[in-house]
Length: 330
Image 1 (cartoon, one colour):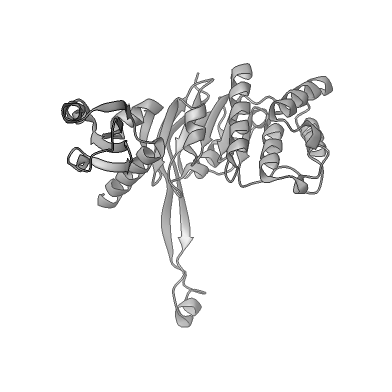
Image 2 (spheres, rainbow, N blue to C red):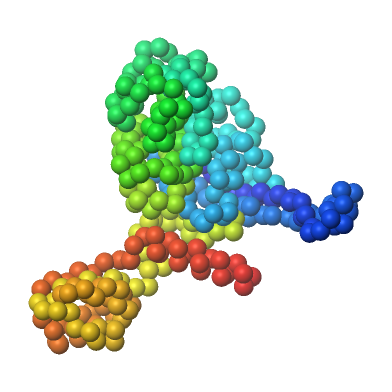
């Protein structure tokens, strides 16, 4: 049975339209005009137990709204969803004990108290047995390297340290489902890698199901095999991460190292991305890679050659742009 199942899930908001000018503002006091914003537009998907799925989209695409509906924080306008075999917006107590929602821009820990005190509060809220609580807390603090910081006030911690504490609080009760909304936002590379390792190890040990939104493609590549892409509230891709490159990556990046200085006329083979000493990077259509490599080898001596897919960030940006153009045309 699927952990998450959404069918034609839709959320629409009425937004007040404020007019410019004093007279228009006064008229708006007794005659208000609204417009309809469709934050989520009939998306359907299912996530099986143990999957780690990335939920991608540009700002305003509807990702956070979708997570809030799945967590029961927001009622949908229409459509259906079942999470852990519960209707999330009914907010059954048993349902709330089986998942965690971590939002990179929201705090669940008490700002002026040590994180250890907030952890004790979570233990009481979720009725975690003392022995189990201490074992889990010890494992998580060791995994994230913050055992010596739990008695320090949360407001005195760095952003990366606070995010690690937030993650610990979310995992203390052993959730079956973890909803992660930008968990590494604003963190440096070291902190990002620590969060990624913790999530990978926790998934390997507990088999927890994860749905992750992130603008950092390193998070996606490190954690997820499957990707859902949403734009303007509608689903535009649901499939393996590798399939995004195959479907939307029309070019390859060919990196050449010549035995002498790189020739200046490589532009006839494709888009020259870099030309520096004996090195040259050329963007080439996928279907023409073999043909162009043969042509280059016929004319020049090469010391090394590498053929790569474009960076994932670039491909995802193209997916967003194509979806935007389709939406504008519609």
